[in-house]
Length: 296
Image (tube, rainbow, N blue to C red; front, top):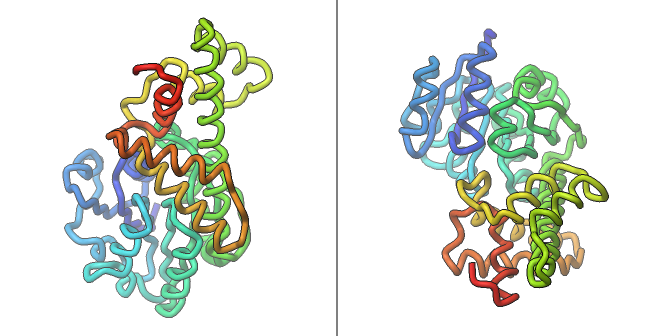
C-alpha cells in the first residue's frame, strides 16, 4: 500500500486494528498516551511518535480509536493535536464511540481546514477486531468515504453507510450499544430468577441461545453472565456508563423519553460506585444478583 496512515489509540480495540493494517501493507505512524502499548506495532514496522500531531501526514489519513469525547477532542484540537497539520484534503476517520454533537463540531472544524471528518464507529469485541471482522457504521462526506474504503475493508467484514450527516453513524452506534446493554440487563434478571429457583444458569442460557435467542449477543454475553465471568474485560464497564450517558444526552436533545436507558444508567453508575468499573460491562449483572440477595 502506498498511503501512510496515522493511528491514535492503541487500547483493546485499536491495537489489533492497527496490527491488521500493518499486515495488509499500510505504513503506520502510531501514538498512544501509554507509549508501551505501541511496542507490538513498532516490532511489526510501525513508526512511533511522541505527540498526536506527529501522526498526521499533510493531506493524509488519520484514524482515531480513543475512549471518549474528551480524549478525541484532545488529540484533534489540543495543543499537540493533529487538525492543522492534517490540513487540505486530509481525512480523519473517527472510529470511537462519541456523541453526535461532538461529531458535528469536529466535522465543522475539519471543513474549515479543508479536511474531512468521517464517523466510523464499530461493533465487535477485541477478538473481532483482531480477526478483521468488525461491523462498521459510516457517515460523512462521500468523497472521503471512497478514499478510505481500502482501509475499512481490512478492518471489517461489513460497512453500513448512513449518509453524509457526520453524526449519523454515532447515533446508530449508540442505539446498538443501548440494545446490547438492555439485553444484558434482561439476561441478568432472567438468569437470576432461574438461579433463585434452583435452576442452573448455564443450562437456561444454553437452551435459549440455541432456540428463541440464537444470536451472538445472547450466546456470547449470555454465557459470560451465566458463568459470572467478567474478567478480563473486552469492553470496560466504565465505558458502558459513558455510552449510556451519551444515549440519554442524545435522547434528551431529540426529546425522546428512554426509561430503559435511565434504568441502565443507574445500574452502570451503581456498578462503578461498587468498584466494578474495570470489569467487563456485562458485570452489570452483578448488580442484579446484589438486588436479589445473592452474594457474589
